[in-house]
Image (tube, rainbow, N blue to C red; front, side):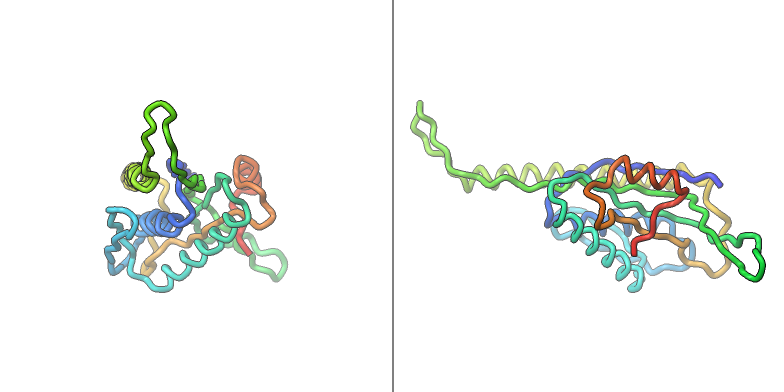
Length: 217
């Protein structure tokens, strides 16, 4: 089976922005891969002037929030590191029976890599020019800098959302046949494990070697 992979643009975010950014991206992907009857729910981000759509499924929201909580815990233990979250869609197929055991396997047909660079915003201090003897108001300059940075993050997040929409509109041939009554394709969300100091090329190589992402326990 052909597995399409989408590497989303890396976003540089601060710790307090992680939850909203990941909710926006993960729910957008799942919504565009939903199959059956959903109840779309518009969600306005509190930190950015962006509205995205959820499927209106409480259980789905709970599962995504749980994974985000795990990811935030990992980030707190590994500050200032680039990291990834992988959202994978798969089919469940039965293997050839061996003796009395019927085994199943997961065939992954699409994987989305959400790339985040979580940074700590530097603290601002007052400064004085020795030549002009003008004291710069640290409060005003800090507000301007943060406002400018927030606009940059918002623009980058919009690019990621457009990247998702472009991908789902162009990549359709690999999507499995739809089963009657199914609303969502089976999926899993993989985050860095507690033993990983980083979640970069080594993790990707392990995924490719095993043929599928490692399940988070």
